[in-house]
Image (cartoon, rainbow, N blue to C red):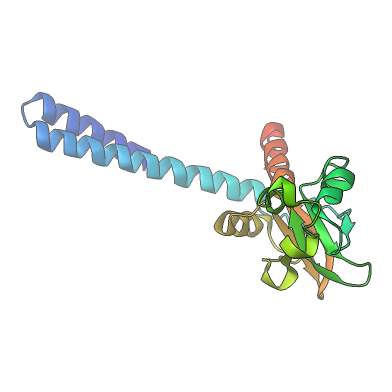
Length: 183
């Protein structure tokens, strides 16, 4: 693809310098577009190879902090967000998971309302969340995150929350494999 793109660019430049400015520039722009598409396809293929054969269970964190739904946002920030290294929290009880609350949802509430706003007022119910299973291929997990515009996906097994895949953990996995030159 890139060879064809470079051929279009060169042909376009030759036509432009020989007097056919419009046709030459048009061919060069087509070549630039093809070059971008070829680079993107090559990057996707490399990414697919880095993630091939790996599943969500390998990188999920299973230490998802549980917060009660009646907790106010000021206490959530003070006792959880500021003291732990997490961007999302499981909402519910030890017997029942209701959903997730993220730093982003807390940001959406004016700070003056944090003492009167409870987690149950802002969290996303489990039924509305995209979920993956432990054996979901990592490339599919990445696609889900990208399509949905989310930074984490709950990992569910037989209706039970078993962990969380975060964008940070996925990117670290990709970076480490790439840096080490692992196939």
